[in-house]
Image 1 (cartoon, rainbow, N blue to C red):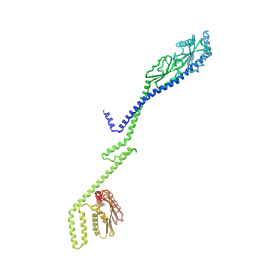
Image 2: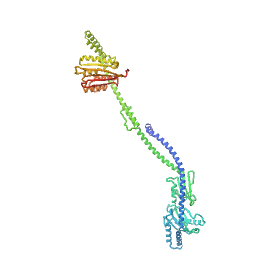
Image 3: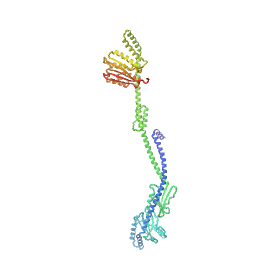
Length: 607
């Protein structure tokens, strides 16, 4: 159960295994159906083609066998018409009858028979008289041939007797075929025998005295059997039968014996027979369809086994390929799990260029974008927190100063009346402007104002500072009337003009100048505050530039207590106008300083 559960769990979590399983099942079922169909078609084709082929081959081989048997009979007939052979036989028989030394005669007869060694398929030759065996020659055993030994001599003499009787009865043909013995007693050489009248060329053979028995090798049938039988196929068998339908020759040792009976033809066998022109023999081919089917089944089983091996290899290759293809998906899955934990730095190592790896690369880019966005959100939160801190401090300071705000403004009003009564109008103007500045500054109910109010405040501030420093500097404010009602927050320009007065004109006694210019561009307002003072040293300029770049938040300059007023107002401006606000500075030693403000319309405002 545990193993089954593990297999089920593996399949439920691995797409490659499920894909390989379904594909393999589909391929196996389709291939099995196809192979079954192919098997039946092949069996039908094999049955029909085998019959047609074997029938055609049998016709050809019948002609070949008839030609070979005719050649054997013809060459045998040529042997028995040799007059010298007849004379030598008569000489041997005469020497034996007269009890003379017949060794020379035997030698002469032997040499005469040796002269026929060139004849094909001849295994032995025997000369038989009416009184019995006279002489025999065996091309394999020479003088000591045992084919017509004591146990077989009666057979060769019986062959001669049958031929004598057939000739006496004037039967045709003048030769006879004999089947027994089928082989040499001491070997597996199979033979058949043909008896001829030894005429020596005499035309009248009614009174012949001798018979020549020539033993032919049954290998004469091998060519036929090897042609009609398919190598390594057992369902087609060829054999030769005699006139009694007994099997004469069958080249398969396991099925051959002297008296095998011809198999009966039934529904599972097909017999093709072609009678030969000689000896009453028949060439046969039998096709066993049961064996044929078993042969096809064996091929099918081997094919199925091979197919299963190929299928297993295919499954392994599919799983390997799917694992390789799904590797980036697993990497993405692991990275997503890391992302669930908040770790967006876990990246996928790209190892290819296909679509899935492209998806992995897109994931990496997405993770980078998310990490960058998180960083941006953290930065903005830090900036907002810093702005809130600055706002809190400003409100705290405002609350602390608010206690005396009305007292100071009322006191300045009284002083102003005293100055008017004394006829000192210049003092009255200064007191009035100072009162306006303080009243504008201390008003906590209106933190968002319009640009004309802020410009008016700067104008009064510069007027007071100019009277304080007398001839040190002068100023000019040029601002378009169309942008008077541009929203802004309070006291955004004071630190910049104060910086010009306190630091830009330090050491100067005259000819200082501050210019404030405004220029509108639809939803944008450009304001430049510039002076012709001594400018900034490189280090201080770098600190102020860093404050502007970091939008007023935690810089090295803030740790050095440099540009605190500028840092606070920059923070407030970015909170009010948003990320589109841009503040830049240009300065050079003894070359003055210029601050340029690219101010957008606040997003919560409409034109």
